[in-house]
Image (tube, rainbow, N blue to C red; front, side, top):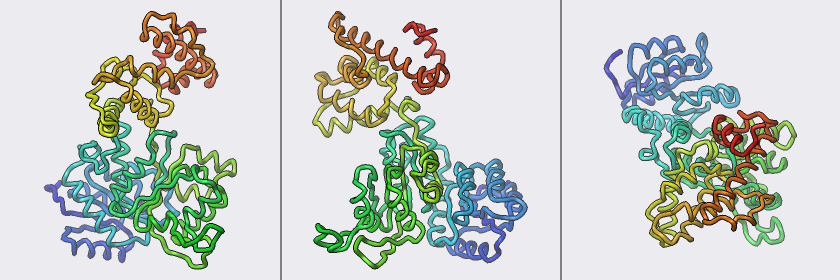
Length: 460
């Protein structure tokens, strides 16, 4: 293989005119452009030369884009591939190559946008991939964590953000799905344009339509003047539709029309308004189940689920809790005019072992309350334990005998034991006695579950 050339781009397409158009545009930007007419020729080129990026069509004879991309990545994983697709025909393919491609473009595409993405790919190639997923080098600093799950998400965001492809963010309530949407926007070419969020479940159906599409003066009784909707406000930027699974079927049909035509019509209006927005949606529901139950349109599901990002619950990435604690302590010190310096080892252990059913939102809430109540400059286990026990305690657990303990820590230990036993019973019942499934739900190992069952006389 020749010496590394950070200015070389390989263009792969069986369409001669397409190869020529892309090559000429990139040559004007100063790149050394090499072309290949199919996947087989592309692999031969990559095995002999070093490229900063590859622009490649998905549909090609002999060897398709997916197979080619996999082989190119095996030869040189430092190459940043940019994939060209025909919209609506390669949805499944895009999902398969999502982990390998740097960016996606659907035909017809904006050549100036492609040139911008090529420049970004070349810059990433120069930097090298080692630290791109670390928080210190990531453009959006609020996506806290250095564990493998969050680092993989950051890598994926860097790949998908450069294109205008629709993104669906999946995850439980409180995991931080809006932060993922903000990160996608912050890493995109539209980062200096508006980011407009709206929560579909928080607005009544009768008002949601006017919030999304706007209205003209006189459209309804209180419409004293015309008002642009969220799509118009986000024009040129990104719109984030949180809890899209709660959108009514009527609105789903109107939203699908916006996706297809890139135009909206205000309530009470007759003119269409063109909108150019990046769509990012999120849900905590299983949309495939919603489709089967006829509560969500199948055609809309496939339009918004071109690229999906799954954000795991906090109990699945406990290694990120110390960094999250540091972030929230600094945040609330400023907000509440406090001077908490840190957290004790015992308190940290308590929080790391807590299952966090409410995810990061619950962690933030408990920590804020603890900082308000803490009298020392270090958050202690004694301060946090009652808040954790209060959050965990099901209503049918009797805590009236906790006063019989000689200390608060003993009382908390007794209460926690009762709570722990009931949570294990609930998990076992829900999973029909399957210990592996119950342990997975509780976020602990099967060995730990067996030990806890023995401790609470649940072995049988």
